[in-house]
Amino acid sequence: MENAIEMIGITKTFPGVVANDDVTITVKENEVLALLGENGAGKSTLMSILFGAYDPDCGVIKIRGKEVKIKDPNAATSLGIGMVHQHFKLVHNYTVAENIVLGVEPRNKFGMLNLKAAEKRVEELSDKYGLAVNPKALIENITVGMQQRVEILKVLYRNADIIIFDEPTAVLTPQEIDELMEIIRRLKAEGKTIILITHKLKEIKAVAERCTVLRRGKVINTVDVASVSEGELAEMMVGRAVKFEIDKKPANPGETILSVQNISVKNARGQIAVKDLSLDVRAGEVVGIAGVDGNGQSELIYAITGMSPIESGSIYLKDKNISKYTIRQRIEAGIGHIPEDRHKHGMVGEFSVAENVALKNYYKPPYSTKAGFLNMGEMKKKAAQLIEDFDIRAGEGANTKAASMSGGNQQKVIIAREIELSPEFMVVAQPTRGLDVGAIEYIRKRIIEERDKGRAILLVSFELDEIMNLCDRIATISKGSIVGVYNAGDVSERQIGIMMAGSKKDKADAKGENV
Image (cartoon, rainbow, N blue to C red; front, top):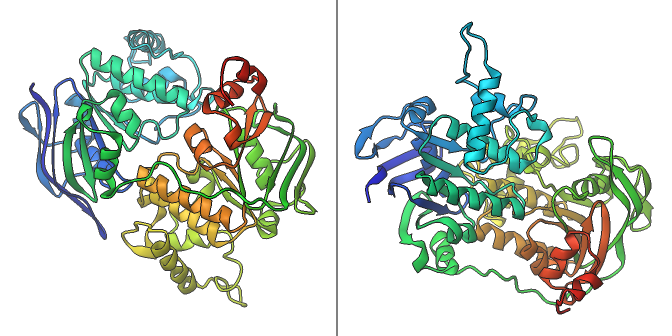
């Protein structure tokens, strides 16, 4: 089979980091090639070079045997290369069709935007590839999964026959991931060549034919996916055997630390998203919230951490009613928060690691002097310690800008900060979303370590295997209400899935499940 792409001897360096070190890969015509590696392995950098977002320091790129210079994304587009970015590049108050045609708008004979022609073409593409997107819908009114389909349509509208997917499932629910895998199969069936940047082994096994593994900027191997196991891929990726199950001793729960009593919370649209919900979390246990995205999990998190007011009910931290506390008062009372959206609520991208580590207590000694000045030396000292303790890959150490780091290392900075604050209670939301198996193993291990220190932990995750693996008790949520709370050993993954759809456990049992 002819090679659609050859990238030969590609090297790219950034200050303090060799992102790609003499990398050579080939992609065959009409295949799905997975590009696998840890966070920071150089996958996205390599594909950004192919898409023209970066210039390589050296190396050669060939498209169907012809050497090319890809100076910018427009040049990539003209060569039939499209890229679906991990962080969507959409204008939220524009319609689907307006976003798709932005920059290549169809015009009528008077030079005006022909929106009807754009909508018609978008509808045709949507039907052809089974994407089911409404061209007239506003981006701000559609789900994350639909927004990703818009990004795919942007690429198809520009006639791309080589499509790069950059960590496409990092922000998707399990159902949306299944739908995306089917879309990728359909694109391949239509003759497209696909590069899938990922560190999710199940997805590689589901759709890819070959897999090239990168580690710390170098190619480790290229393998036929059918001939290797997930464990072998994981070992190639991180350089050691990876344990998918976390070893943990039984929980030894103590007193109730957090008590949520009959709270109701509105969402951003003013509708009740959490209805009369009650839940307790005790010292030394992990309580998991399992549910389909959009069933009140975010609003529950916001209410507990002080990011949203409650309409009714009470929230107690031990014997203190914290329902009216500000965010800072809740932090000082002993609440930690690893947020579901690390970029929006967890860190400041333009700040250094040192500044992000001190975000929650910069106004206290040793980070603040009596005169009210920041002590950057102390911030950098603490950041350097956490970089070492949490194995954070930061090219310029404590001075590294958070935005320049991989997602996994950004997440480690947030987790390091929250654990260092030593809170009695922690809300841990989507802690491993978008992370590689090595980082997932590490972060799950740290969560259990905090449990074993006596912390009370509320874990919110869309990953059912994560809920089953880490939690001592599991609460299922549907339409803003708790369907049931069960000890982890008393309920199966299948039963949890049925309850997430709103059924009670006894109905799940009636479907023939074993408790």
